[in-house]
Length: 577
Image (cartoon, rainbow, N blue to C red; front, side):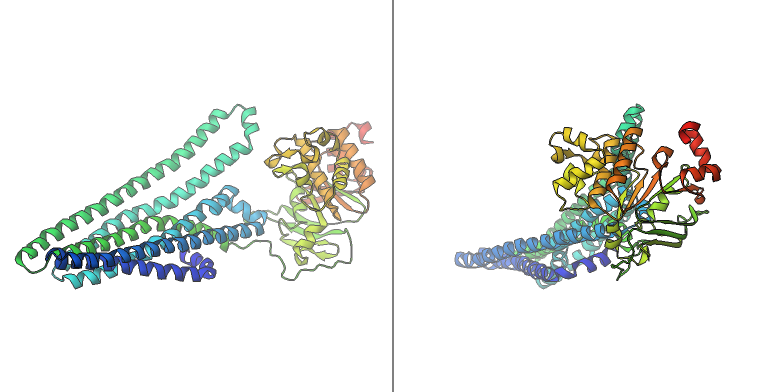
């Protein structure tokens, strides 16, 4: 998967890769030429006392060194550009893919895991690319070139390379074989830490309300301990890597000097040749060591690439049409035709054979016990899920065939758990209509019964909102979410239990303001309280995913036993009448 991802995302940057290869080749050739010049200085300059020769060859070595440094700097610069561009494009690709996921895929991976894959996993792939451009490309050049140049200096000592290089590879390979599964486990445990921390930060109020700080601290400590243990085991193996390499390097150096010294004493080779051979052997082993360093990064990057690939290769269960319908003949009509829905792997359907019509200018309410399928039903409308049976129609067209932007532009969804983004009151209200004027914002706030508390906030419309809207109360958050939908002015409003945090007085005033100011739009209200939907034009009663009652409040009191039970559990006989 790592090679697949690199091949896919490096195509636009091939000129930079070519430049990296050219400059790394130039740098490697310069490095390989320097020991030969050094041998000439020793054998023909120092040994003969020729100072002029030493200066001439030394000047050439200095010029080649300057060239080597310049090529190395340029190669690292282009390599960094390639690696950073890869990371940027990969994060963009993962983010775009996740943005296309339906609720099913997001739940399948989990938000903490998706965050880790978009950040930490991408960083691992980016790092291995950076090391490839700066170290790994030059490593085989130095190793292969070093072998060739060493053999040119003296073939008699080549048996030392045949021993030291395989010894280094075997030692490093044995260590890496044990590190690969540890890296895979580490990424999974990082997911766990992210999940635990995210739960604790999101539910901090619940934690404190139930005095569970100690329990949650212990839970995080356990997750953190699991990561630490794996990291320590990998670190211990990593700590063996460089001592092993240095042992092979030093033993090889001693062997070259020992056996080479005997040949120098016998007059078979010169001192300069011996020194050049030693330098080439060091370059060969350094090339192997650089490849070893890459071998440390590759397993973790390969694991990360597999995790990224899982996201990129997962197709959304909600498939958007290529040439969706953008022109509609009807306005504000919502129709469910024999709709059913079942979650993957579930034995029973959540929704079964639902059929009803919500018309423009009318209020359609949906009520039922907890778990009846109310939220699932309204989530089919903006295609957060797709129905597994039947058809959902908006303005006479199947939602599967509508252009996504057209569909989402028609709907103003106020979810069961209203979410506000970090910014200001105004930036949140303009989320669906960026060009909305301040008059439009205040009008929407007034209808949503939120104007009073926004005016009291320091800054008014420019008052800061923290991530998730945690600096305002639940009722204020709901009203701001309603105002955000009102600013958008869609044809269809979907209130998914959006009045639950409001007191009955505010609830009544808000619904009255909606009736007066939002005329001609279709309103679908999911509610738990009967008082919220008592004046709806059409009330649909759900039980176990099926419609068991339909009509107005008075009609259902007479015809639906389920609705009558709900009413009797909430209202007195006088209030119900």
